[in-house]
Length: 173
Image (tube, rainbow, N blue to C red; front, side, top):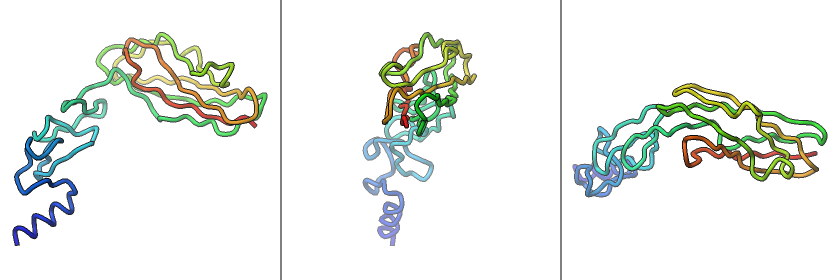
């Protein structure tokens, strides 16, 4: 009966490696209160085999510990949809400085450049955002011709390596 219960528990958890208690020898993730291994959850972490710790809303799990990135933003893609030639579509992008220091955005732009892609970033994107504060910037799309266009939003900031590079998409019609 115990063996059948173990197999049922493992089947439901989809994460059992053996009938041993969750620990560093059989779990590359962390162990939840039910002694099951939790892996690949960006908001739950601890060193391998240790008890799980939940990260707060501003943190992610990196190398077994909760880390607050210097900043994070919204969606992975901003899609302008169809925009008529000679007109400009706009979209608001709100982001939060999840770090403990001021976020200084020195420059923002889209690759490939506007003259080829039709995408632009409002001048007010260059700013300082206090810790835990949010800011909104305006993105624009003025299609240079008929067809589909895409690019990547790039920020130059004191955060160092770009942590957020959303894709921008739009179709000229």
